[in-house]
Length: 219
Image (tube, rainbow, N blue to C red):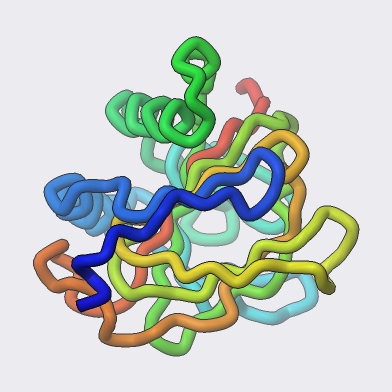
């Protein structure tokens, strides 16, 4: 069976790393439980409305700072005006562990201080177009954690949305980190394979993606 064959760590681009199965099943269950709580508020999960009137197919809830296209704020004026949930210390520690695992430099990981998380939920039809994570004022790496259904993650280049790119299957428990030369690479999710997740994680269907970031902002 494919699930019995370990998937190797890959580095699809400079300063980018894919670590399959990095999260334990217990960690995944804990994250699913936490995400359910965050999705209920104080600022509930929502489909983000884009500046030109479109609506994203993924649903998003934020921690620490509230993201909407091109800016961060402490309160969610586009949802209910509430202040977003705080960024927990235990998630900061998990982010530092992920940074260390990806880059192998514990001293650098100690200085990695993510202060926001964007939590995206994909149902079987949701997609994410090619985009850059560039609303932050910091160029610190982005830590991405996947739980639930497997997806195709398309990781491109910083010059534009077109080729060259690499398509990577991100499965439940996988870690992907990108920084340095790849920090502003375009990336997206063109497909989710519905029904491929393990219900033992507590997620019965769909895909959760948690991206931890350093905003570089202060109050």
